[in-house]
Structure formats: C-alpha cells, structure tokens
Length: 421
Image 1 (cartoon, helix red, strand yellow):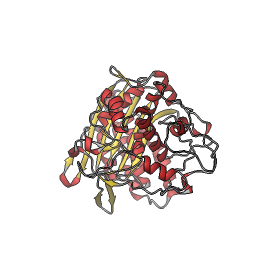
Image 2 (image 1 turned 90 degrees about the horizontal axis):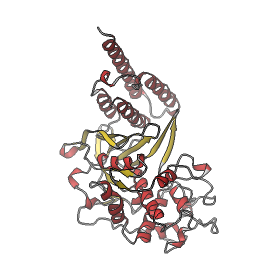
Image 3 (image 1 turned 135 degrees about the vertical axis):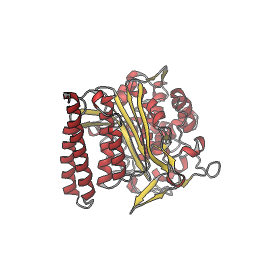
Image 4 (image 1 turned 90 degrees about the vertical axis):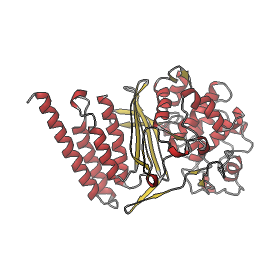
C-alpha cells in the first residue's frame, strides 16, 4: 500500500470518527444546559479544527464528495430541509450545489438556482446603494439625514445631536436593537394581488417620531448618536427610504438598475412579484418531527432584510467586493469606497463596517454578513487573506444550540472544501 493511499485512509478514518463523535454529542446535548453545551462545542470544534484541516493535504487525496456527505449529515442533524451553497475564489465561482428539498409539499429538489430570502445580507445591498450615491456626491456620510427626510429623525433624549448616514450604516444612530415594534410587517405575498407597496415613509414616521401611531420610547437608546453600536434593522429601512428620496426612484428600481442588472443578478429582487415563484424556497419551522411551512412574507423594513436571491446571483455581488468593486467588466463601486466600507468607523463598532460584519476567528479575519428570519438562515463571508468566499442559505431559522453549531460548521466545511478546489 502506497504511503499516499495509507495517509488518505488514515485521514478519512479520523474524520469519520470525529464527525460521528460530533453527531453523538450534539444529539445527546440538552439545549437547556447552555453552560455544559457551550464547553462541549468549544472542545468539539477544537478537535474538528485539528483533525479536519485539509490545507496541508493535496487535493487528489480528498474524495470529491466527502465534504458533501458531511454537509448532508449536518443537515439531517439540524433538520434542515434545503441548503444551497457556493464557493468563490478571486474572481470566479468554483463550486455550487443544492442539497435537500426546498418545497416539501411538491418535492422540489434544491439547486444552486433556488431563490431564498437572504434576510440581513440585504443590508450589504442597501449599503452599496447608499455608497453609490455617495460616490456621485449626492450625499456626504456625515450629513444630517434630516437634510433629506420629510420628517425629523432625532433621538428625543438627545434632540440636539444629528443622525448621519455614517451612523445609520454602522449601527451607531442610537436606535434600539430589535425592539418589539409593531410589524404590519409579515404580509402574505400573493403574486399579482395584495403585495406590499414599497414606500415605507408613513410607517417610519409613525414609528420613529414621538407622537406617532406606532411610537414607543423603547425605539431609542438612552445615549447619544455616535457613542455606541446597537444593531438596528429599522435604521436600514431609513437608509432604503433615503435612497428613494435622493435617487428619485423606488428602492427596488434603483437596485435593479445600478446593482442587480450590472452584475447579472436576474434572480434577485426585494419584490416577490419580480421573481420566478416556482423557484422560491418555502420557509419552514421544524418542531417535534414536523416541518411547518410559512407563507411567503414581506416586511416594511425590507431594505434591512427583504432581499431574495440565489447563491449564484449573490456570488457575483460578493466577487465584486472581493475584487475592489469589479465583477467581470462591471464596476459597482470604487476601490477606495470598498476599503471605506470594510473598515470600522467607531471604536465601539470594530466588528462592523458600513453594511458589512468584520469578524475574527482565531488568527483568521472574515468579512461578510449573516442573516436569520422566520424560516431562513443565511451566511455570506470571505477571507481577505486569500480572497476565498462562501455563501450558503437554508430555509429554516436556526434557533437551538445544536442547530446553530451545525450552521456554523457548514461555513468551516465549505472553506475546507475551497482549500481542495
């Protein structure tokens, strides 16, 4: 037996043992015992990182479908009905695949062209639209947004402090993190009938301004804008509305003309009516052995969370950011603008740029955005160190520790797979 073959067999054996230990441990873990499971996760992840590191192994030694098999196992473990994933390197998509079923009622198999709700990944699109207007000198990042809005946006606790584009983009506007604001938000979308019109102004004013129908003091934090970071979806709804006001186009039309069409993202939209209905992934909630489907829905804060796209489409957008604003021959932003967006702007927001999350995991830096809403969990990330990125969507909201751990392992597996491509 050759040394290479022996090395491969040993490696695969170790991998199988580790993944089986992982599955057994996760299956036995109680989601109520957060402390012990947290320690379990750390130990298992260290074991996986030690034994699963494929970077030192030649691509020929790795079975083509080995990582795919692990992905299927993790999907089963976390009760994921569908998974679509893509890997990009430099300026190319090098791998895409769909797993599972995206519409269980009609037994529709997932492909890389299946369209998912992207959730908070939407913020990267909205930030791109704002920064395009910035490049055209139609706004300044430190402008008071009241210069453009038809109502006054101020934290009533600090009415003298202006709120700027930079603050909204980096979640420093002193808006509260995910308060229980009223959401005339989850609205059934019936193609051609009853779809939510995308003009959020009445809701924004009634929600954000004291005295409004939906206003509550919990909307605002008790510290001035610019001081601390608080992740706030509603701030991106304001940004989407500002794009409409400044560009004199609907937000959807602006994104179509200036982002989606130039990048060839023809299966991406903030409006369900603009998409192929038969390819939309049904959002599910799994409970006690049953998958419960949600109706397709929209929200009034759609610039923060309402994008629907495929991993193939979104990979083109990610490539543009990985390559200083260019995808093929299309430029969506200048190189210096990309650098500005992928940098922190406040001491308290070192893990967030302008619309992009900035994360460190060990010695590795990641740039991207995650997302989660009813019936969907999403991830888009790349490593600036080697310009390798991954995107994956599932049509289930990961909630318990087992599901969250499985979801995070998918990212690691995809980056390992990328090393072998």
